[in-house]
Length: 296
Length: 277
Image 1 (cartoon, rainbow over the protein chains, first blue to last red):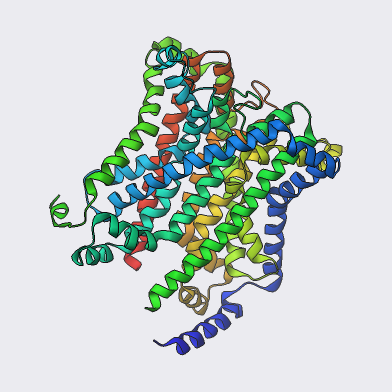
Image 2 (image 1 turned 180 degrees about the vertical axis):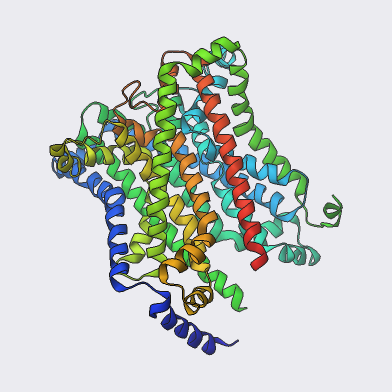
């Protein structure tokens, strides 16, 4: 309503912030920036650059043949399969959990929120181990599975389960605070107007949370495709069969086939960069739609 | 309970029921398997599994290196958050986005990339080697990897608090004669301290369980550079399931305590900040 005066005020604020009293001398400012850039170079930029230089060290042909290798392709396929199952399941769970927690009051809610966070606190190695204890040969269902000729551990189902576990909280954690902040006025209005539960979900709630949902999916997918520790425990490392891309990187690296290892790693690094770009875009859209809501 | 009866929205039983079912199936029952498996050991067997010298050496390395890594991140993460919120410089937006790289980059890729740089023939390792400093394949390498994976936590918890700080308090401090350093230590730092502590604990908790990025750079020498998650893997590969699970339970209990601590911290933090709003 008072857009112009706010702009003038923030300009005035910016000028004050730049004045000597509330800012640092120029030399302090630039030495802090230089320190941060040096720190980030050592820990972020150089590792990222190293992946691509090492990948291309033996030339472009070696690079391509490492990626076109049959084992690499089947690892790629398995990585996509695991993500394709884990992401939708955790997405449905995230929406259900956020609906129950954000729209209703019940006893034990804060315990439930803590329990949903639990997989973040568990080491990936332990995440793999617990499924071995249940489905492994000496595990709870080991004999039963063996009798029925079913394999979970050292097979694809185990990899999928471990992937679901490590990416379990991502969508729920994005949605719970978002839906709590949005309240339930719009859903109640839809109900009064005669909408059914599923209609409310599809037409009111999901459009409202779409950016948060997408953000959670992007994070889940990145972690699902990159998970190493948990998958490593349950995979059995059978080449061409139960190898995901990160495990394939490890095998090649341990065989001293560095160029191929970094070539496969560069695919995963590109995936990470795409993830960061998508994340920034979604953040930008989410901030814009939040602004639009405030202006209305 | 009374509120539940007032609530007219549908789907409570379905959504809560599915949430609890899925949570139990994927997380709670499998995790309880670890505790049930450990209970098959008697006290002596448990103690031998979790307190043998090699395992104790791995706890010291895992917790020591995690603590150092999280501390490095507390200092440089705060500095990074400060520079990103307060100053403008070329490439700032790209750098801001890249801070999340350790979340997005698979840990195995991070592990081999850090090894390539810090190995004696790498870009940085090569500069340090003539001075007799070895980074990769020593405990210092473990610290490097754990610093990398914990990097975004402090930045991302401190950054929003720094952005929301009112310029007026700093102006008031300045007009009352405080210099910049006094304003920082007496006004700004107390306001961001809880967020800093939260970010530190998150980085620490993440570092304790980390596996993928560490094993490539650590060298994995027993008693020297072997982390606890690797001990679990080694025991598993020797089919010592009970021993592996006993060590896992020790780590799980420590992680649960940390998680409760972090949640308590965030609760305290939000309560502390809310009266001001």
